[in-house]
Amino acid sequence: MFNDLSERLNGIFRNLKGKGKLSESNIKDSLKEIRMALLEADVNFRIVKNFIKEIQERALGQEVMKSLEPGQQVVKIVHEQLIALMDNSDFKLDFHNNKLTKIMLVGLQGSGKTTACAKLANYFRKKKNAIPSLVACDVYRPAAIHQLEVLGKQLNVPVISDTNTKDVKKIAKQAMDWTQKNNSSLMIFDTAGRLHIDQDMMKEIKDLKDYVKPDYIFFVADAMTGQDAVNVAKEFNDLLAFDAVILTKLDGDARGGAALSIKAVTDKPVAFVGMGEKISDLEEFFPDRMASRILGMGDVLSLIEKAQDAFDEEQAEKLAKKMKKNQFTLSDFLEQLQSMKKMGPLDQIMKMIPGVNAKMMEQVNFDGKQLAHIEAIIYSMTIKERENPKIINGSRRIRIAKGSGTSVQAVNRLLKQFEQMKSMMKNMNSSKFMKNFKMPF
Image (cartoon, rainbow, N blue to C red; front, side, top):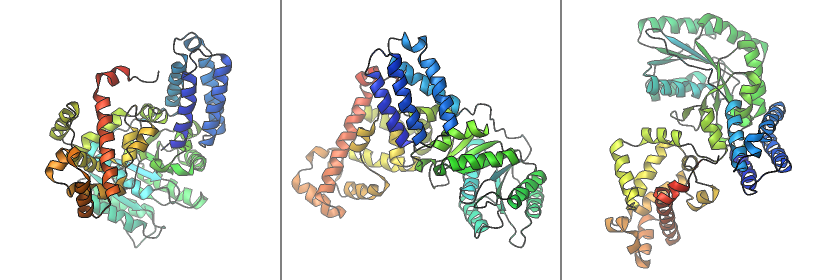
């Protein structure tokens, strides 16, 4: 997510902060580089032009030129302007007391609407104690109804559908009648998409909107399509006036153009982002947190929220004490990796930790596929070896490799990764680290 843009911007800021005092020429050269980085990230040209203009006006003012740390001040300005660019503070999603809340999802085929319906149902059930139900109004895409029913079954959420008709208003009426007899506080309507916008599609969705009178309409966009997603969003908004955007597949978007452009183009904010394929992989969109991620500052609040969902309180306290005393063992290492799997891809989790840079990511290089090998290696160790890896000599490594079906090199690699992680944790807990760590502005 935003990998390419983050690397480019971090390189520009490292150069700025290394110069001490800045001249007007230094700042303008850096802004040219930022401009190119944003354009290459597929951010709308007009938005980039205005964004750079606003930064330049502030960067050449007194808050930077007379600052003791001008490089950090420039980063601060860019951070604030990124937040403003993605601002969604005007959007509030309120659930009605003792009244059904209706949400409709719209967008092109392939954007991830059907999966987003299930993710929203799961999210609101957890976060708002909603009692959701799903309505299958995508009557054209093959297997769309079946897909929604499968997702509903996984969540134990009712799905209202009718395979005998293509009249979406009739299906919507059945759903409204059903909800009067059943206990549901949230109804989410999946609608049909097309490979492109056409009049028949828009008329059907508009008629459904007029009939259902949804409380909220979300436009679902594939973040990886960049400016194409933004342009389609504008056309949908002109015709439907949706309330907010759900960006799917943001975890696979190395550029970030859609996330940075869509609010400025449509004047409608991003409300949620899809960060993976699992039903739980939906996050509320926070512009300040996203700006921090883009600028390599980490995202502590999101990390804490994910950890709270994945770890129980007793486990977290136990781990904190061990880390503080530098008593982290291979058993703890395995336990935490298994819990971290619940939080999402490990590389994304690492990026949320402030101060963890690309070099550290390379040093502690593990992914979900390697976890099975790590588990096998650690399970092939004795309790003593897990608690004190220093006793694992050459003959023990050969035995562990044979027992785990891996190689001595794989065992060596794991032990090296473990020591690197342990060292990183020690540094993060040291008073020196905490004293030196600060936001880059």
